Image (cartoon, rainbow, N blue to C red; front, side, top):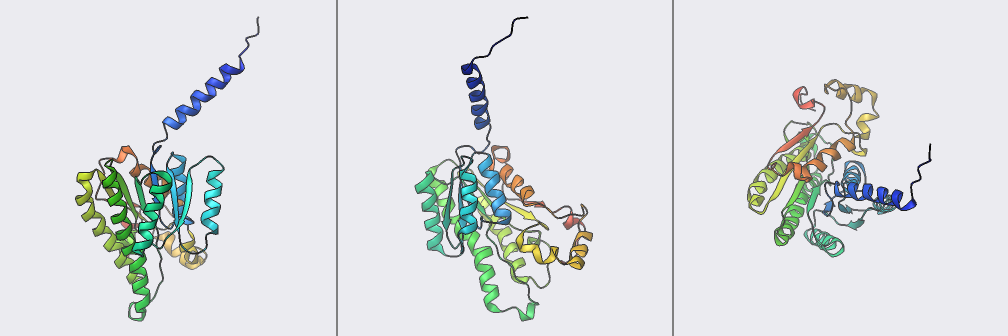
Length: 280
């Protein structure tokens, strides 16, 4: 039997064809995304997921730049288009600069993921006014300012867009000792519903993702306390913590053309917790 030979060029073209086929099937290829509070936890998972689907991503952060830069370097080594920018989402000037940075470096804004959030627990009557003001500023004013600035840019571009808010099941169910957080998330729900209607004529969709218990640094105190962890898991029918990557997967779908007819809604991802839990 004669041995069949395959030339270098044949192999090269086969691999090149596969590579271009993969690029063509990246569902967010050509899009530019801004993710706020994106240096750790759910935000970092969303950055990785959107970048894996071809999006150019701006990582917003506040404070220590080390985690954001490490994440950007990790993804840049794999050929992803990534940038970092320090912006306080509760500061209108910072938000305008964040949008301008994305436009300047990547040419526009197609996706905004409002992920930045903070949480601290106090009995209601002992909640410091400063805690209320800080949580409302980051968790509600932040999405308002970022959505407004991003929507203005999307409208000017004339090609539609996606706005996704990382909300919480506590936009709907109570969490005693967490009044500012719940109030902010309830506000984000009505903000989303209202601007989804206003922005629909511009082909800009607006949706919330409402996670339950997700294994992130924000919930480390609960997870490392055996008693609290067991109590929580009893409230979750799937009896486990969610993964940041699971939230990210839902965000990717909402940003894709597959979800082009989805707007003005909250998508809950909580292992069934809302169907079983009382007040948490």
